[in-house]
Image 1 (spheres, one colour):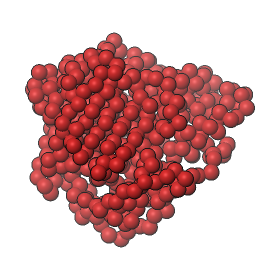
Image 2 (cartoon, rainbow, N blue to C red; image 1 turned 90 degrees about the vertical axis):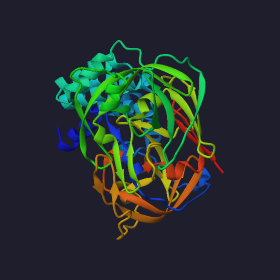
Image 3 (cartoon, rainbow, N blue to C red; image 1 turned 135 degrees about the horizontal axis):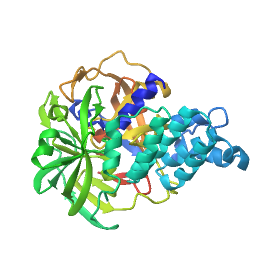
Image 4 (cartoon, rainbow, N blue to C red; image 1 turned 60 degrees about the vertical axis):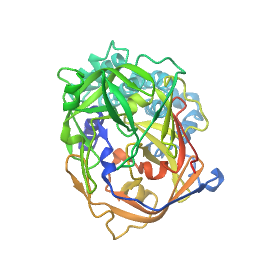
Length: 444
């Protein structure tokens, strides 16, 4: 297994991608928004036999799905490679129910051990997405036997949740709302009650799981999972030890939710040292919890409306622009009216960013300037970023033109960039995880 693949596995198997350190960035770029009709976005040519895998990696999931479904029946059903790719496309759409039998058939046809392990890891990820931790544990263990590198702590986490009805409580269709504040930092903070103790949490779609600090976990008596030690890292690539646990009862938005899986990180890993002072974060509500709801975020009125929905439904929306990749949620968009690019959807990030990968793919000129000069972030880490000017990011029928946009160094975990508050705050935002659709309406 390559070192690159090993790093990718460790990052997800540790189940942490805390993007909160982006909140430390002092970027406040001028942004203008305007409607962007679909016919004004230049679409790439359709994929074919020689570039389907590459196009999948680029996030062109719907196009790759159309190509694979257009193949003669035997070219798909008798090819381990095509079936594996097809299953991964369905999984990217969030449709594990459809992806599982396809990936299982691909596993049966695959003769190469390491490729079987990769397919088993894909099935494991889909099972975790659908809260089927018992199935996830079985495929993760098989992937390890086939040479796929996973940390033992992650398997202990899966085993501990095998018979737990996670996120129990609110019925489907139940609704609630929260007022939120954005004082000091442009992040959504809502009141929560954790095992009977009042606190405030960041709503962070960029975090894979709900995360708490070690001291807060002790204070509110999080039920720790033995031998679940793994490692994770934040935006600045600094690694931290993490453990897994379960919150017995979590309340927000008028809901009471039982048995919430959490990651427990050192306090210093959740303390932001910024030019605006310290910003401690005891708890963030991550994607694995948020996917159980549809969120309507009104930045102007500072209110978020929650609707409990069943994420485990077939994904058939022709408007789908959200896709699941390596435990994270990406939104599909355009850069300077050219499609398609994938951006991490991160309500826990203050700035909207591009990566140098996305900059290269979009053929944007490299700036010689450093902007911002210094960013202080997670765990007292520092980083310098570059910048690009006059860039338009298109999402969900809208164009957001940035006068200046920060660019961070290559990190494939973030693909082409990150959609944060500096873009989202201009809209009334609906994130419908059940349909996998991000919708934007004029927020003025």
